Image 1 (cartoon, rainbow, N blue to C red):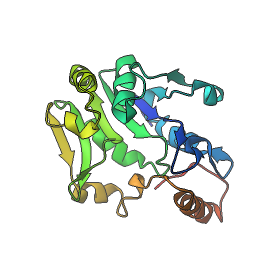
Image 2 (image 1 turned 90 degrees about the horizontal axis):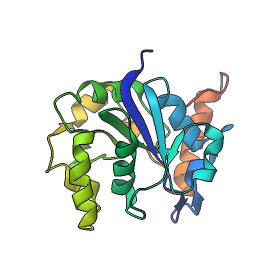
Image 3 (image 1 turned 135 degrees about the horizontal axis):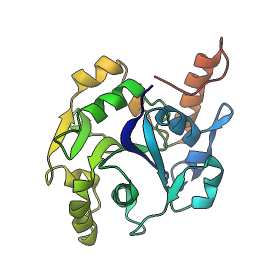
Length: 210
């Protein structure tokens, strides 16, 4: 599979109050949650960056690790940091808690990025900003939002040229839209583990996929 000259950014925020620990490190099968995400992104991108405020938790992954330039600013601060350190003009941003990455859909988002500043899935009037492509042209807009203490990622979309990818297109690649399933609670983790075990039942253990 040919790698895109685009950076893959994985946001690993650390301790989750709803989960009760750092969910990126919870295991599904023999791998950590973040490892499942990385294993699906690595074939697609020639640069991978992990953004975290707990870098020691991820040194064993042998990836580029950066910490927030402006601390405690949530996902927008993480996206800003990842884009800042990216060596490419575009980056695919992915949350560390979305294990069912659909590679074909990710490639579609990247292919649509030319001429836009953001390519973001949108369905039922809801954006998926942590499963989207961003251009470095967003950096100045993001910095201004952060300086104004406006930390909602969706605020950037009206300030830059944004392509919304609707449900009909998403379902062409992922009929159940499983790629947006994220793990926020122990119940979510149990569901992901159940799905993983069903996949693994009659085959050797392998990375999660849609």
